Image (cartoon, rainbow, N blue to C red; front, side, top):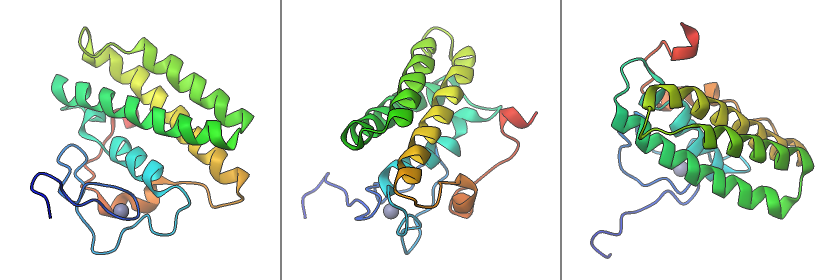
Length: 157
Ligand SMILES: [Zn+2]
């Protein structure tokens, strides 16, 4: 074992350490074991349940989430291109457009709205992929128990 080369979940590729931003606790069995796109769903949920969407978010949390959104979007785009699903391509483009409106360095709190939209389009794109394979659609609520969810989210206010 190499130092500085942490273990990753063999299913969803999550680093096997606590994710403070997401409030993610490491379960003994990967909760994404039975999903078709475990890495995409896990990354989506870490953002979905992330602190950046909450009222008490600080600018650095929003900036980190912005970077993670970009990484997730490029992973989703890679799969969508390979699968060549028209609706998913459109959702990727919409996510890209929403993310381009965000500028967390200049204005983190206005950016959250656009980042939320981007995350929502990414969710649609993942569901387009799942639907194409006639698999169960992804619902973050099914995984909520694995995250420290502190309600309310901004959109609930
Ligand atoms: Zn996992």
